Length: 127
Image (cartoon, rainbow, N blue to C red):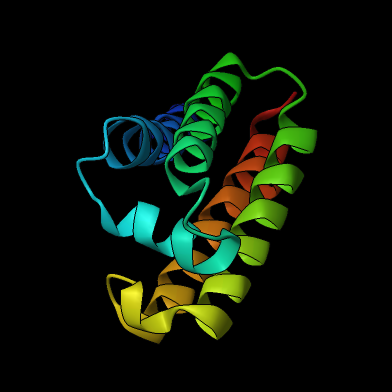
């Protein structure tokens, strides 16, 4: 299978992760644990609107990923956000994470996929 097709499939998967986590888990609050995490880290007073804002940002990230606009900058930003967010959660609220401290492992796998897609696959498939 050509590397370009694999890269497009991975890009779609990455965008879906951002979209689902943003819209369903945070904006629509189908997974209240996300708001609990925000509440624990940033305070209960503004947890609901901050969780919604984070969710909207994640949906925006999904759109940016699919657009391909400045994809390298996008990949670096994704990696930075994922690492920072998971570092804070690992230290401050591991009990609220789906897989506890193991969430960090899955975050690193996701970061690796983003890196591989942008800096290895896309580089190889460019003429």
